[in-house]
Length: 604
Image (cartoon, rainbow, N blue to C red; front, side, top):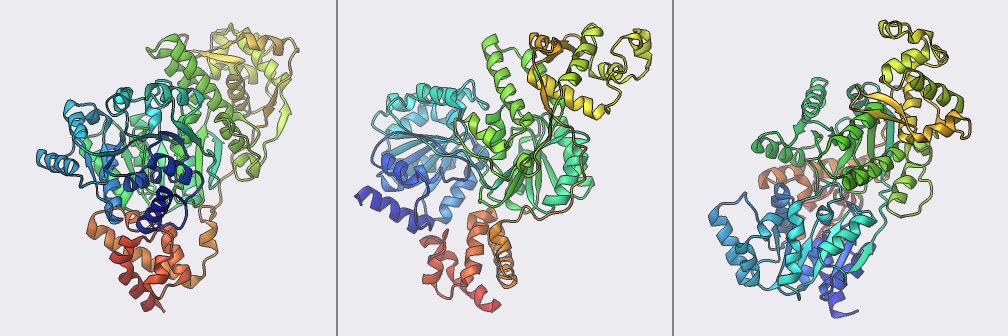
């Protein structure tokens, strides 16, 4: 074993309390600790942070972490302090005195890690500071933010090319959990990482169950889902609009679910308080726009729900990845309907971006619709988007209850013909009234009750026809004209279907069934625990909560649940035994070891 490898393993075991590296961590850490550059794609919860934290401890100097997550820097620094790592941050939340003190520590070499927002990094003052310090490395976290085609573009990230230009001998590591091939290429170009070694881990998160349901009454469906499967668990609910965030949070609270709202239009102090409560308290549901969540370190988020269709698979993967960072069973749940498709298409069409950008966004939306409408394994479809082959997971909704496909050619012809015969000037509601033979003031006024297609679809319910229409829109046979009162219009792709030159298979509509209460959110490890062991976990959690409150840090900063369960399992009677538990490093053993042994002894 080389000296670099030996030092890295020592830091992993002594500081972080883990016996061995996972996946590609060892290769990445050895490369960066040895002075090399790396681009790392690794799913949330797979240990990306260690890939720059350990090299920063091994190498001489301070490791500089560029992160857009100002609201989370304090928690990241607190977590490192618990491990005995000398860490600090520089951002706009600090006083002048605090800033000067940290800058002094940087110059004196008294820090192991320094977190900086990209806006701060680009200032002459900050660049001058770094020029006066001994630098171990640069870590560019959330590196997908550099891509203009990505789902979370941050203009200030483009300026990070200054790192290589001004500090060419300092190794750089760019990290992200989400990047398709186009985004990877842009990261490499904009950050000048052409010579960096690329590490692409599996994008699979096997502990997450993906489920997409037909949208009926979204808030009621969400409430039923939480009550049936996630009551008392921490979760995140994503909504497209600020108004919907506030209304959904109020609705959940009215029905006994402890929920908070979060969006960019809220007062900064209110947002910060909501985020702090979510991180520090158990069982809170955060209802938010996508302004919330990037880099959230809370390990025990048991579910992520979407009440509106995400704009892309990258966005969906990033957001759902905030569930189950601890590896325990978690749920990615979404309601999806025709209006979601219409709304997203409208947002693209009405944006002020150029045609090339609109084409790219439309392609990303099409891929997202493909995930929603697939009859196959959701996980296979999701991983395929990122270029990864896999086999059916047996854990998504389509694997557990495979959808029934049917030859829908005749039904689709009826629908397309009706759209054509009403001159492609009317929206979904009127088209379906004509199709199902419903006489209304509008059908009479336009004499559409006399069309040859009037009533030809009367054998199907409105819900069935809406499911067919949604799939037909997703397939690109029909589009929605936003400039003509959401009128349905046929595309060129509809012609071969109308001429019986192409068959169409669709998913058969299944009436939503009220969910029964289950324990699906429990992990296998929890199910395997004895009542005595679970009682020990409960006592450890209560002790951990007290310590967390006293130190004003989230409970998981003290210990993760997985560590508490392992302690309960082995029932250590000495510090030596306790030191063998994953997540118990030297500093935590020194700080908390005696308390834990006493607590276990009292329970015997």
